[in-house]
Length: 138
Image (cartoon, rainbow, N blue to C red):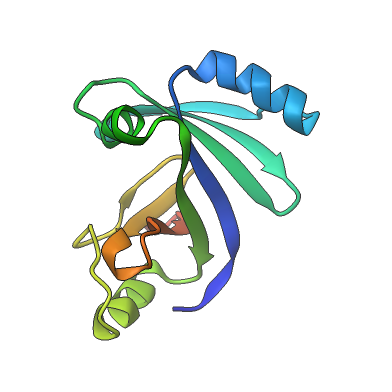
């Protein structure tokens, strides 16, 4: 897998509005986008921090992975995302090297990205997200 950079760090939160205010105060900047990802039952908010981002995630349904995470572990870091040039090639490379992927194929995520997650059990307990900016042909 050829990771280009840390694309974002995902943080699970209970209340997006309150967390936006907190991170505005913490970082000294406004969030630049709020977006719903209906397929994942989350609302997201993004802060640009240098070349990387902070993504806040609030569940929109009790059945969502974020709701379950917050219920079990409380608010906090949920995942780290790495930008890749070719998500399909990166996924194949990881599979060949023994990593378990949570997605058979990339899916549409927030912020105009194709995404795939690596199971934490094969990544030292860390949920890793691969993301690639969606190109016009995809």
